[in-house]
Length: 426
Image (cartoon, rainbow, N blue to C red; front, side, top):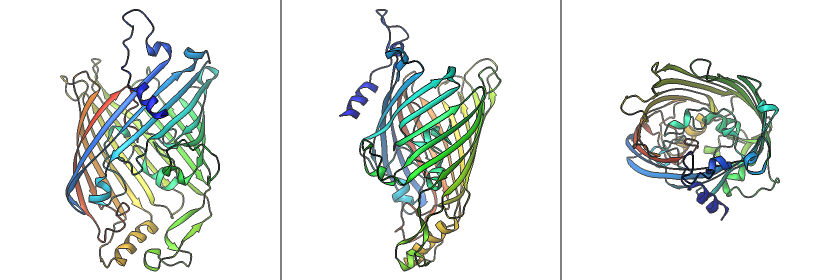
């Protein structure tokens, strides 16, 4: 019921700048509803494990409440978001790969409380505190352009989730972030509850018991001012995860689990890792039009060699308004590189050996995407045809595959309705 009320609120149409009768609009009252619906159809046309197409999608709805305008609480904003997903995954079934080619697919498809946070500004906005039911990936290591892509390589950035234990949208735990931003530069620190079973519930189980510790994050960055030339942004961060974790390959006796069975060896040492991201607009229409070209890149790695990935790096380019006659369109391309940890690669190859296959999973994987966002007139509706390529797919999505997937080509179409939403959160 709370999510249904939330969706109803978010579905309210955006009000004009001034109401016809002169009454304050919702925004002027301090209420900014939003509604995003996206549907991703993808078809594996070559390679992988088998040919075939599947459909997946989701609804993200919510509202930002300006508590200063509503109740006179200066500098305070309440953000509420709900999410619901449906469909099935080409990555999991037809390819076997861990990283999704349909960003709006999730395996646990109950309605979710995806955000309930209080945001409080102090000292004229130089200090900001965000606390409540939030996820780590919306607060740290977040690209402003990653969610422009249909695949989920960098929306959110994969490695901090797989290796660091970052909680990703729509799953939320208790967490807090404190940011100090006296000017263009900022410093932020965060603490987030680690609760491995969170994905099995709907987000309304707010008990503190049963967690595995607290994830700590630290990030420093720079965001140029609007008056300071072409927009640019750079950031770097660290994470610390104290929770115990299972070895990816070996059992308690030191033998490969895929071949010998048994419970996994448990590591009690904390996990550390780091990341860096950068974005820069390389071209902006000197005549004041909407056309611009932005380049973005990121890299992340754990500080030990026992994780899913040893390295992830990506490079993306986004051209806004590629044609003068279509100022609402954009063209985007990205390439992601993953290097599997030796234990993760070894476990996948052990699984193949146990199935009697002589195939081997490569340690280096590449994923690339090109897409075109076609805006339908002045409506909130966008069509995004896309083509994706995966070199050296893994079997983390299909550990029972019995053979190594071939390099895969995936063609797809995203249909998105975005009424005041924050892009395409994953």
